[in-house]
Length: 274
Ligand SMILES: [Zn+2]
Image (tube, rainbow, N blue to C red):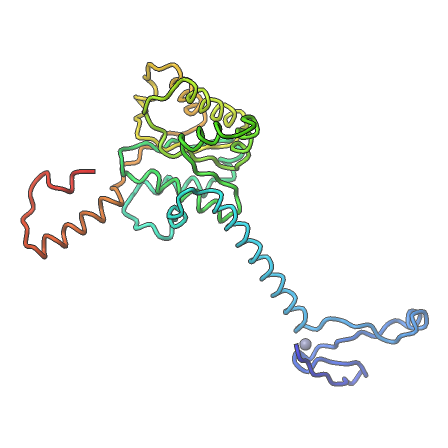
């Protein structure tokens, strides 16, 4: 910073830009003791520059923290783009996701999570990823993963307890697409350990699933039942009925093609598949 100075009426040096003194006169006693008359002071220009640099440093650090937490959070890179700002507003159930983020501090303290349930392509994963991205922005540590990744990670980990602890260390754990596929007892035991440990840690989790709550509650499989029991105890079920993002864009495409080829619409056409 190139500054110019002038001597003021009081004999002190002043900054020509902000017209503030850049030194203060010391009391007589201290002058004698230190053998100096004045002491430097920061003028407004310097204070503003320092504040700006401090702000920039904080922003840089925030960005780095968010970026590093985000790269840990998602296995799929495209999920980083799933956020409230980019949402097309077509899914009214998105309000539940926003509510969760708005009340995060309290829900976190209570260890309260969500079960986002609904059909394939209803936008459950999208909602969960929006929550994840919003909380990542608040510098929370979030992990969005799925059953297969948890189990594979656990089997390849040298210390399984460490692995479970690592998963439980995140502020929010999202298990995407908890399915019905039948798994070996060993794998179900692994999943139970993670979920049970997570619940006991008092930290929240969000589950997305194609299962209905009835299917969860009435499963005859004992391994599944104890997993779902744990989840149900700490997660609020929210039915997601939103129109599939994929489906919406496909039907828009079909509409365009219909116009182009002048194809007539038939009931039960391609749009109804998923
Ligand atoms: Zn100045």
